[in-house]
Image 1 (tube, rainbow, N blue to C red):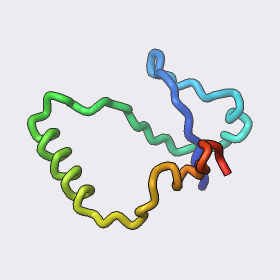
Image 2: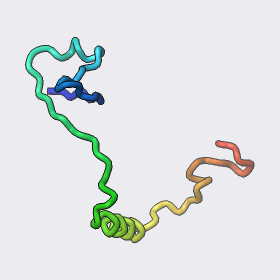
Image 3: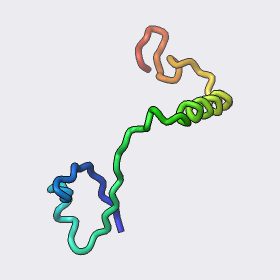
Image 4: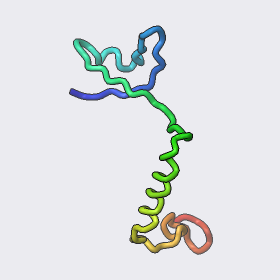
Length: 81
């Protein structure tokens, strides 16, 4: 089994398959639908959860003490090496 991923907007219960995949989809297929939804910003648990995640990340050790310029590879005159 292999997976093909694409975005589509159902119309009258029909999901259109992009032409590039039509020849690959012969015989029976399994369909799994994932609905994209933005987070519910009015959810009262969202902010405390985000703060807790932020605190956990802030408590992690800094394993790379290089400056941002060193990480990006800028040299002393601002060019990339």
